[in-house]
Length: 245
Image (tube, rainbow, N blue to C red):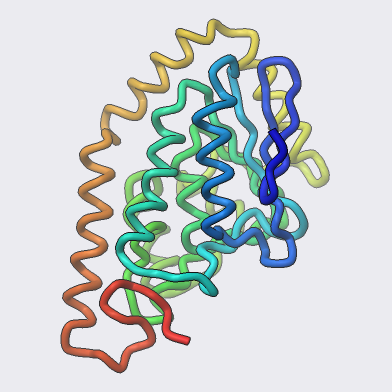
């Protein structure tokens, strides 16, 4: 199938999916999320591995803030992440360039993450006055707490070396070797039994990061933002977590 917002290339039992909105730094529009959701639902049944990367100088800059926000959008975004968790194919994030906000949820949902040395990681929502409802709870589940504090409380943008030390990613690729290393891992996985990979992935996503705990994190994030903005209507976002223009 031809998609408008993602590029898909198949190589036997491996697919490479490229977020393809480079002019918007691959921000997550409704249409892009729909494309990804369709790909996962209809084109992964025979795949061992999916490599997820971004076109241009960004992996993913977060949600497309030019579109409607609100709690329903966060929950809809979450169904896409849940589709990655539930997919039998193993997902590898090949992280190039900028990663911000909701873009981190892709890395957290993927089973592996390899980063280019040029990659940078950030959770900017705190600087805008709210708890990042997509990025923060999932990052808290996978990364070291004090690394998350650097990103969320201090608002620091971190390097891939810091991300690897804090368990946000698996490794930093050699310069110019990001896709080669991601493909090497994907080919290694494609030589294994697909049913075994699916069962092991299911186990890894159950203990200790089961679906109920992930859903609880999103509910907590939305509740925190409701509390935060109840008495502060002049803050940069409203009670649903949407940036004001």
